[in-house]
Image 1 (cartoon, rainbow, N blue to C red):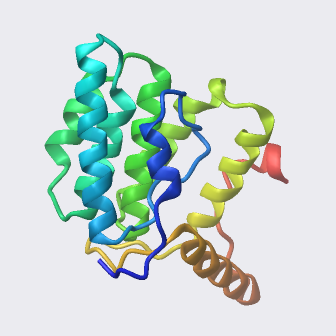
Image 2: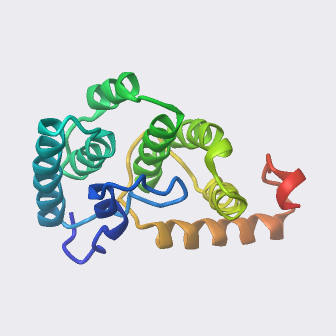
Image 3: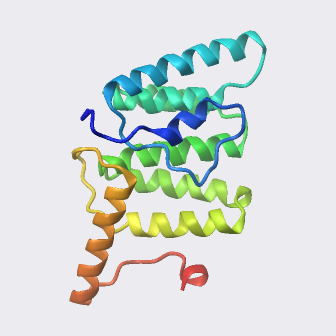
Length: 185
């Protein structure tokens, strides 16, 4: 990974004890050293929580994020977390984060995870977070996805690219499907 990429402040928030925001973005690509340090911190915190018989699901999600950026295959880890999720909030977090990781590299499968995570999160979101996610996911839907990964991008870069694509499509008369016309007009 490029060392000039932004520090994953949002991903580091998964180290905390408070439930993470379901409207957060946890997939900005970090420098390799940052991902390694976050993984080690997550492992230490997880061991401490296990000794105290406290939940550690969000720490396992952080490990999944770090492993993704450290070029580990996360398929089995993701499936284990699907089985380990204790409630809809944990499952929503996992699906949203997995979708974010995939969309950061423009993997075609990203959208299904974002949609599933959003559907699970809806009853748990306040109005502002709901509309924030709807708008973000609608804009990310303009990205050209592929079965082959592209260079990982930050959320800001992805949104800027998607906005350009949307603007270009508006000029050609092409219409992008919007699933939330009832709420975002």
